[in-house]
Image (tube, rainbow, N blue to C red):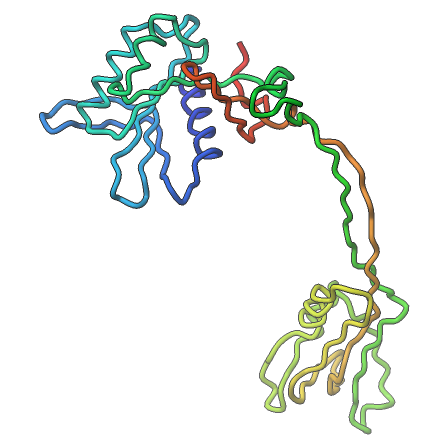
Amino acid sequence: MPRWRSFEELVAQIHRALDSAQRYSIETDQVLHDDHGGQYQVDVVLRPRDGFQSPILISCKAWKDKVGVEHIREWSSVVANLGASAGIIVAECGFTREALREAKPSARRLSLWTPRPLTLDDYGPDEASPTGYIASVGLNMTFMEQVLKTETLRVNLKRSPSDNKKVVNCTFSKATREKWFLLNASNEVVGNAWDNFEACISQTLKTGTASFKPDADAFVVIDGVRAQFLEASIEVEMVAHKRNSTVNLLDHAIAYENAVTGEVRTVPLPPSALLPR
C-alpha cells in the first residue's frame, strides 16, 4: 500500500477512535462536487449521522517536509466551495510558521493536527494539573473461573422395565452430544440434553449446582434403548484468579496534537499504528 494511502487510513482510524461512530460515518478517498460542477478529491470525510450538519473534510499530508501556507489557502477554499462545516489538515511532519499563522483566523474554519508518539512531557505539570498527569496506571484484576467438579456429575434416566437388563455404556459429554437429542412422546426432536445442560453451567455465577430438567416428558434413545431423561446435574465452583499489572499509556496510545493551539488528544491506538519514518 502506498505511504500516502496508509497515512489516510491512520487518520481515519484516529477519528474513528476519537469521534463516536454514532455521530459520524468516516469515509476515505472520496470525490465530492460543488454546486458549480467543480470536482475535488477528499482524503477523509466525516459525515454527521444526524443529517443536519455539513461534513468535515480532512486533507492528509504524509510529506517529508512541513506543510506550507499554499496548502492552507487551497484547503480553506475547498472547504468553502463544498459548503463543509469545517476543514482539517493532518500533516505527518507538521507545518511551517507561515502556515500556522494563516490557519489561525476563524474564518478559515481550519484546524491543523499532527499524530505522533506520546512522551513523558505530555504528562508533565501544567496550569490545569500542577502535579502532572498520570502516564501509568496500576491495575488489580480478579478473574472468576468456573471449575466443574466432574466427580459430582449425575445423569438421571428412567428406563422401562423391559429394558432394565440391557447394558448401555455412554458418557454424557460434548463428545457424545449426538446421542443426547431429546424426543417427545411422539418421537419428535425437541432439543438436546447436553446443549441445555451446558447452557445451565454457563449461567451459574457462583458456587452451587448446575442442573437441567426438561419442562415436559422427554426421552433419549441410546444404542437402541429408550429412556426418559429426568435430570442432569453437576457441582460448579467459582475460583478467583488475581492479577496485578501496570499499564503504561505511552505503550498503548498515541498523541494527536493541534499544531496551532498545542492541544493534545490521547488516541487509544498503539504506537505501532504510526507510520515508520
